[in-house]
Image (cartoon, rainbow, N blue to C red):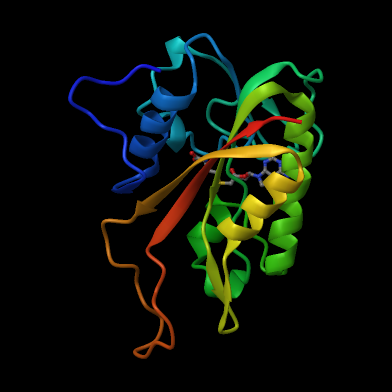
Length: 206
Ligand SMILES: C[S@@+](CC[C@H](N)C(=O)[O-])C[C@H]1O[C@@H](n2cnc3c(N)ncnc32)[C@H](O)[C@@H]1O
């Protein structure tokens, strides 16, 4: 795949999603691919990607700035096996009470969604994406681990297991560290504050 001169793609970076997705796309998505972003949101993932290299189809449940259609990722209007790559970044945090308001709104978090509810929603989306992806098509899944009621929930491990059970081969796992220190609600802490997220790249094999 295309590599920018002097630029090595690393598994771990400090920065933002726009840079991360651009690097991952350079490495794993051939030019001319049909790419469905099924959770477009504000389109942050695309900011540093040269869209002219791909055939993007952009959707989200919420009306957005530049989406092609309002679509629920659990029921995509695409033919079986018609998509080369999928970007999938659903709401990833549960416990809306502990998630600041604007994040809740921006990411459509649901205050009543449990961690298991988050995983069920990811799974429903992955199953539907598997239908529309062609064989050897690739899925890019963004997620973040969370601590819920003092219990560690390693979302990235759960999703990797689910992907493998559904017939995917994990191609890569990127770790993105936020440059800023996350704000704290309390002046004490019982576990390390998470300041990193993941991008899983997987290929549909079976
Ligand atoms: C974490 S944000 C995505 C951010 C996006 N990747 C970006 O670059 O701005 C999650 C998105 O998932 C969308 N969403 C939540 N549930 C959905 C569903 N069932 N079907 C489609 N989109 C959904 C939300 O509207 C929200 O835009």
